Image 1 (cartoon, rainbow, N blue to C red):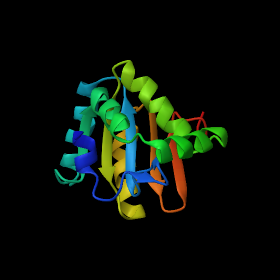
Image 2 (cartoon, rainbow, N blue to C red):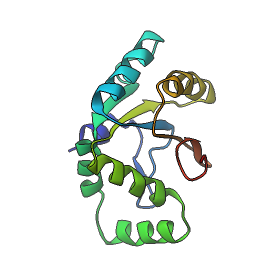
Image 3 (spheres, rainbow, N blue to C red):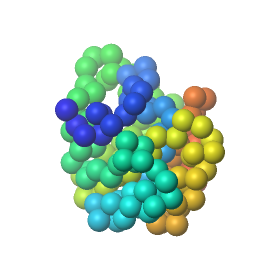
Image 4 (tube, rainbow, N blue to C red):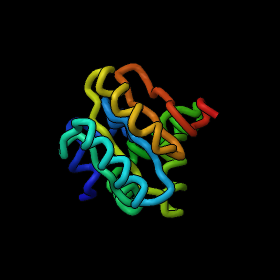
Length: 145
């Protein structure tokens, strides 16, 4: 099982599509930069079980774990409507090229804002927050470019 899947406190999918509700996910060019972002989060008070850095290989492993007929169908629908699966496809593309990821559990808006302030300063390639009512694109995604 991927380290990232074990890290998520809630389900990492919704209707068969990658959707780790209440998490800020940021993409960095390499693992060292992702680790630095997590170190800065720790300095501002985020606990070990609230923020993690993982190499792109972990995201690829997580993607393999989330396969099945139902997932495949919902992922295709999501791609057609250019919703959640499009961002996940972009993450997979970046992971295959060595990008690393930071996940931060942010159950409330205040926590998300605090985490984003730290992560934004590190210059992520992309970042988004998975809220109850949709994805908030923070950087580098199709909605923020």
